[in-house]
Image 1: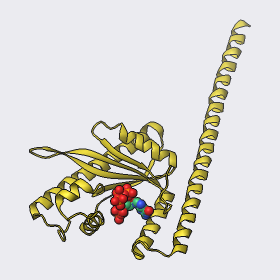
Image 2: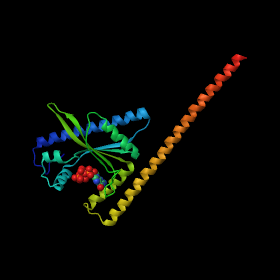
Image 3: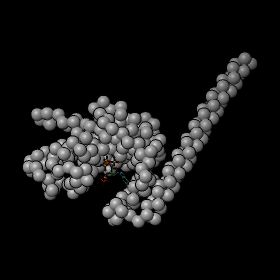
Image 4: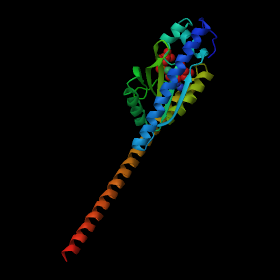
Length: 236
Ligand code: 0O2
């Protein structure tokens, strides 16, 4: 992290940076473990991939300015929730809520706030599930509960958000109205695509389940037939 624009000492900056990096690594590792365990138990990965980043000093200063706040470490720590950010990309919308529940069930993660932009999309069309959590970072002389923003979304939502983000920056938040309208329309298509893919996946899961039941039934019937034939042979 560079120090441009912030008015505190280099040492404080270094320490804050170290703490946020540690928090980020903890959350990322926890998510990777959950995904591996889920794969082991259910033979299925709810998480496609995970991205982690520390917000750039330029973005921090910009956000503080937007909130009318001076660029200090105290303001940054107290008012900016997404200095450490983890993005979890899932295949299906149902996986998002499954992953969110798994996060809630982690004893050392405290959920501070949730924003469900899937149930309530932003006017831009943005859809994603946000959780602000804190994780304890153990230093030599103290424990620092550190905020991390977790964004959980589908591959399709991520595709939309990354393009919209580029457009937003290109036009400095003031894109022409026809582009904004088109993006909202694309967001609707993405939501529809997610819903249809989920339905398709549910149907495939149901078919696989039925096939497995039929296979077990057939195996039991064959066993029963064999036992009856053996009994009949003994009776002769
Ligand atoms: P960046 O560059 O991704 O880090 P704010 O309301 O802005 O004071 P807050 O409360 O953190 O801040 O807002 P929110 O709604 O929880 O959004 C935080 C982050 O979600 C954003 O960070 C984006 O990453 C993402 N996001 C929110 N709305 C949109 C949107 O309409 N389009 C896209 N593409 N992403 C969005 P930053 O700091 O804004 O940006």
